[in-house]
Amino acid sequence: MPSLEERIKERGKAVGFDQVAVARAERYPEHEALKNWLNAGLHGTMEYMARGEAKRLDPKKVMPEAKSVITCALNYNTDYPYSTECRQEGRGWIARYAWGEDYHGVMEAMLEKFSAEISRQAPDTRCKIYVDTGPVMERVFAKHSGIGWIGKNTCLIDPKLGSWLFLGVILTDLELKPDPVIPDHCGKCAACIEACPTQAITEPYRLDARRCISYLTIEHRGEIDAELKSKMGSHLFGCDICQDVCPWNKKSPRTDRPVFQPREGFFNPDLREFKRRVEQGYPQGFKNSPLKRAKKEGLLRNLRRNFFGGSADNR
Image (tube, rainbow, N blue to C red; front, side, top):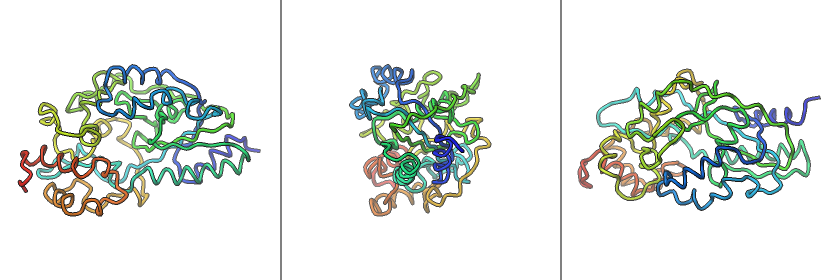
């Protein structure tokens, strides 16, 4: 008869996850690294990360009875060119993860269903789900459950799927056997570090969010430093460069999930058309889209300051 771990993983795959694995619910070295990262101020204005520091550092503070963390990965790599292959004049770039539906809702629904399946396999168990919205470091648990390793660009890399992954976790009071950790296979490669136009990867495995295009176009409020702005290219929302150049993504499989396919006008959009879309169609035209995170003001800033010479009337 299959073990409980095997049955749980089988149910997770049946729900639709590409990877399901187990880690112990405990502190890991990466939790201490987060503390140092926050103390250095590398999180910029993302104050919510500092506010939840105690819980981020210890899963027991999130769920005291937790013994295991079930990590789940979902591939979102649709069959479209990478940003490094799209350098057309007058067009912008939206990060691949944001082309379709907001992954939070997609993942939460899947995790809720998976959690119910776990309860059927082990009645009376307690579970708590997280998808990038609570004080839980999904990447750390994904690493320590053996789904992949954390690359020099700080993204989780699965040796078969690459790094185009949405991650979610289920904290549970079940005591499950953890999966073996995968060794780091980045080797001497520095492609991500060399390709970053703003030098946000200050050293291997260390990201200065204050210089990261994803942070600047999504989380940062207000104007962008002129020195960084001049290096940001045509990015409207997020950035994929450090993943586009990663050798482990060269043969990353594609997904045909409809929810992750690009909405009309979201793949490599015409800048002027997208500006009109934001001005005239926000928020209705962005329902259930990750782009709402930047708010209308942020999207217009990214368009105005980076691509239209700073003039709000320049169309």
